[in-house]
Image 1: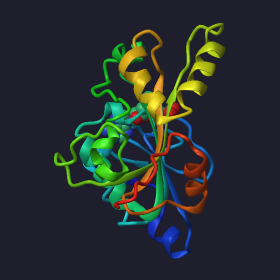
Image 2: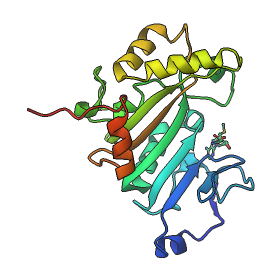
Image 3: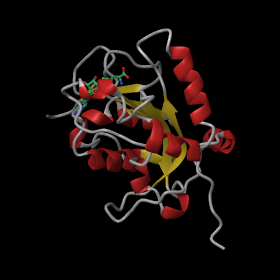
Image 4: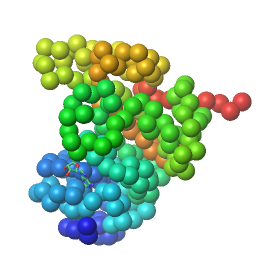
Length: 226
Ligand SMILES: C[S@@+](CC[C@H](N)C(=O)[O-])C[C@H]1O[C@@H](n2cnc3c(N)ncnc32)[C@H](O)[C@@H]1O
């Protein structure tokens, strides 16, 4: 599928505008964002198949990437991740939401082909920045740094929602609690999804994100090498 680019990206970059893109925006997007989707809906500025990459965006040109409820539809996932890191500015941030593997509705959608856990993105994180339980990084040469990661709890039963929200508040106090939850409790209290912010490994992200990561208990602490 040939991308249809309805906006002048070079002009925006020449004007020094910060690009904020919404990958798989669907029918609505926030003001100021560049909407990208394979379906040509009114909110969509670039009609493209994300599985074929983001060739219409130059390297390191985007300040912020938003991608909500989309990565579970894509294959290969790593190609899309590689493209996100290619177009992201050195201090840019990617804001992702994906369904957690314990979400029962995940399995109902016939277009979902991939599920996510707390450790999925850790496979692309250098070992010294990973969570306590280490996972191999040799499957891929991609490297990213997670600034924050949160499990999202929600129920379609309104009366359960406040209980799930309170439970989520507790679990998200610390990455160890999140890990304990995923290993032992997730089938009793399924999570809705995972919200995470990442940047390039080696980058700390923009000052706002650094501040967020500093105050966020779930952001991994940088360990000293000594
Ligand atoms: C569940 S919707 C999420 C829409 C929006 N992000 C939201 O949070 O409401 C998934 C979106 O991803 C888009 N999508 C799925 N596969 C895609 C692909 N290969 N390339 C581009 N967009 C894709 C779909 O068209 C759809 O708009």
